[in-house]
Image (cartoon, rainbow, N blue to C red; front, side, top):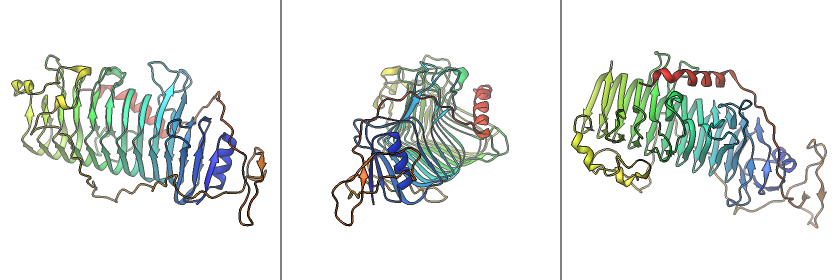
Length: 446
């Protein structure tokens, strides 16, 4: 295993040409225009990480295409965007047709669009076993979008200052969305903002075997948004075996859809809280339309609405439109931005604090397996500096005193300077369909 120390774009590009399974690439603080991995099927994890988590390297654009066993950790991924040039689907990071890719403690962001946030933090299409954890998504039109893949794990992330959707899922087979925070959305009802959305945009395949659990969705200082919105737009691809369990949702009084499933089979909605202020005119409801087979139990919500659904099992729920006085037990229901998680908990019904005991969540499909993450405490191995045949840009090298078995090393790291970037990313047909569908879906608000 080798550790590559890099401090500028040229050195990073050279390291990418050299790395093998098990290697680590350590980025000095500074700006890097891109980190691109194409056709890199590593046999074990290759990690790209900052030299210091306190001063992370900034990567303007990162991608992994037809690659496997890649870890991005302790880095920032994002750049300045320009209204009229960049769009809501301009990607900061992109993973396509790749397996075992992990983002850990990554900040996805944009700057430069004021409150009209543009860009998408992460786009994932095809492949399997992608994990995003302990990361932050902010100042984006869309936090992340995934489509046509299997085994996605989204755990312990923060989504805030988002204009449209936090996390979007299309044609996913197997996955876990757990213990994420969504708040401070900067949007309007016409944008149809959702914290978590599952849909059939651009495809006729449903999402199956997905668990959405222990997520916190609060308005914070923003205008709120819809909570968990699941819809089969094509009408022939109902989403199947979706479990929505122990999520806490509070709206600011601007939206209806707390937890909505339109087109589903074998759905479980258990122990969730979905409420809004008592004086508002919009119930933050649980809604089931065209659902065949559902368990709805132990929930605390403003209202339950069902239409054209069958084989529903209801038990132990409290709906405030029927039991108005129960709202007095919810200390934080009218506190808005000052509401805390503990002030919204009523013992015995709805959301409860998750147990601190470590548990394993599995789906009925393939076991979710993220790429292993090497640590920086492993032995560092020196490597030969790239020659002119290895890279398009010459790299200065200095030869150190070595033993017979050692080799040359790269030049001592130099601080990476600031970059002025002008970047236009190709847009695929599928991503255009996603954007088009998003603009049109406002008609599905109610």
